[in-house]
Length: 159
Image (spheres, one colour):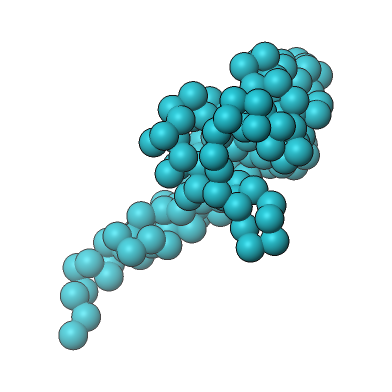
C-alpha cells in the first residue's frame, strides 16, 4: 500500500531539488581563478610537507611505492604485501597499519587529498555563468538522503 502523504512529500522534494540543480551554486570566479592559478603550487606544497616527514614517498605530487618501501625499510617497519610482493596500499590496509604506526595517518590523508584534488574536476564543475550545477541524486542512499558526486558538487568536495 502506498502512503500517499509520503509520496506527495517526496514529489514536492523532488521538484525542489530540480530547482536547486537548475539554479546552481554561485561561485566567486575571481577567487576561484586565483585558487586555480596556485592550485599546482598548493598541491606541491602538500606533497613537500609529506616528503619532509616521509622522505622519498612522493615524486612531485605522485605517491612513490618504491620510496615508501625504502622508508619502511629504513625505519624497520613491517608492512603487508600483496601475493605478487608489492606493498598493499589500499585504504583498509592503511587504516589497519595506522593502529601500529599512527604517524602514517598524515601520509594516508595526504595521498587521499592529492588524489581528490584534480584541477580539471573542479574547473569542469563550474559553468560559464559562474555557477556550480550537479545532480544532487535525491533518495540515493538507503536512508533516502541525497548523494551528490564529490567530484562535481563543490559543497561535497573534499575539505
